[in-house]
Every structure is written in structure tokens, then in C-alpha cells.
Length: 291
Image 1 (tube, rainbow, N blue to C red):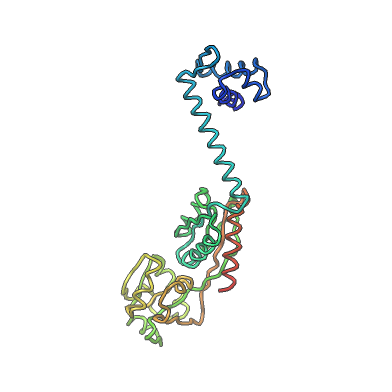
Image 2 (image 1 turned 180 degrees about the vertical axis):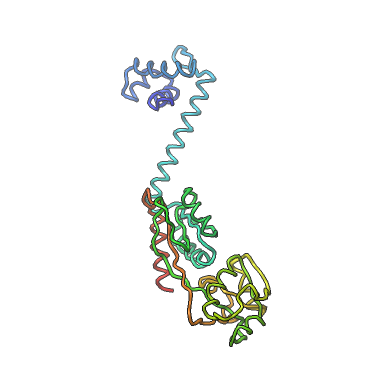
């Protein structure tokens, strides 16, 4: 690796065009300036040609000067990014399951609107992808439904989310046969969620394996659309249901024995959260408290 002091001397020498002025600017002797140049030339070959009253860069010298400028720009970008974090600005990166993401993303946009120095980057993903993304430092914050057992991660309770049985608004529910008559609107976690919830409310029923399927969607924001149109029922987390625009078209059935999942906020344990991430957590926690 090239010595940064030598590189700085060379960059100033190329700018000043004089060993004497370079030494005065860096508080070095002319001999020290020549020594720095000689050290670089020992590694890279001839870098300049001395002419009366001026110096001329060789092609290698011009390439090294470009390198010095690139390094200077990179350092400035680094310092700017670090200053941004101290000021609470920069990127907020969050990866979450779909349901809670539908709830949080609009609030993050509210925070960004009030603080234009922030940039929001959010992704919907299942638990396994959330864990990998946070561990790989691709996202600073994540939410998962199961508390991770990994010493590299810090996990704290963030919210609780019940599973809900959702029917079309005009339909009643008296027994299992009413659900069979409607049919199930499935989704990637649909069978598992429905089994967890309905096996408690209907312990003597045949189970979801025998339930007719009336539709499927892998888009969290569209799962309730066929339910609202009277085409079937579904089981879905509460935050996803609350994000649906046409609440009047839905009917939420209160089950005798509910299922409530805890959502865990995770981030890397080895280093502190950025100021902007902590700012986002505080804001989202405040909004969650008003739900």
C-alpha cells in the first residue's frame, strides 16, 4: 500500500510545480520532498521530469495524480457520510414481513417527508431472508416473527400482531360448513396461518387439507381483494387487514381462542445503531403506540 504522506506530497508537488513551494506548504524541507518522491518512484517508476522553473508529469505520474484525486474524493465522501449519520441524515434501511411492512412503510414516508435529509429503503421478505439481509449488512434493521438465536443479532420486542379470520362483510359464520361454502383465499403463509387459528376454534373440523380453495395471491396487498368481492374467506395478520382500503367490505370474526405473534426488531449486535436508525425506531414505536 502506498504511503499516504508520500501521496499527499506528490499531489501538492504536481499542483505547485516546485519543490521549494511544496516544502513550504507542507512544512517539510526540500530534501524531505525529494525523498518522498524517490520512495514513490522506487515503487512506480519515473513520475516526473524536472525542467527549468517547472516540472512535467510522466504518464505514470499523471496516472498517480488521478489516483490521488480519486482517493481524496473517496475520503471526502466517507467523511460526509459519517457527518450525515451524526446529524441523523442518510439512509434508513428496513426489511420486514409483508403485513407489518404495509403498516410501517407509510409512516416511514411521513418521517422522510418531514426530514428530507433521510432516504427510506424498505423491502418485504420472509423471516429467513430478513435474518440473512441483516447479518450480511444489506439492511440495518429487520423485523421477524420468531426471535433469532444468534449472538450476532440484538432482538427486542416491537409489536404484537393477532391472526384474523376475515369474511366478506355480508356473510355470517355459524359453523365450519359456512367456511367450506365460501372457500379459502390462500396465500404463501395461508395454510399455516389458517391451521394455527382455525384448529383451535374448530377442533372437531376436518382441517384445512379438506377446505376448498377459492383463490390464491402472493401479493400481501391483494389477498383481501377477493374476500371483499365475496369470493372466499382468509386468515391474515391484523396489520395486513388494517392496510386494506375497503374495510367496509370485510368482516373480522372474533375467534374464542386467538393467535398472537410477537414481532421482533433485529439489528447487528457488534456495533451501535446509526442515529438515523434510532430515530426511525423511536418514530415507528410512537406511531405503533397510537394504534
